[in-house]
Image (tube, rainbow, N blue to C red):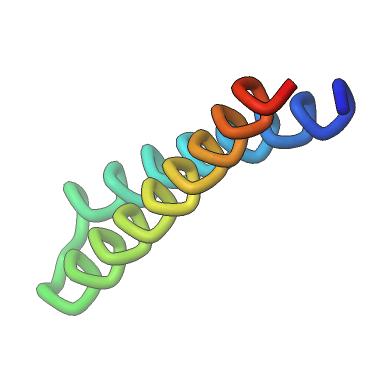
Length: 63
């Protein structure tokens, strides 16, 4: 159970880091396509982090 929590924490941090990277690239994009691509990827990464955080909360409440 502890290992699962550690893994989820790592996944959350990785998703948040990916989102920050995509936000940076979106801000420095040269075309509308690049900007929208990176904004979309950032949003997807934040959604994944949110799902992992919810899963982590459920584990915490369940034990």
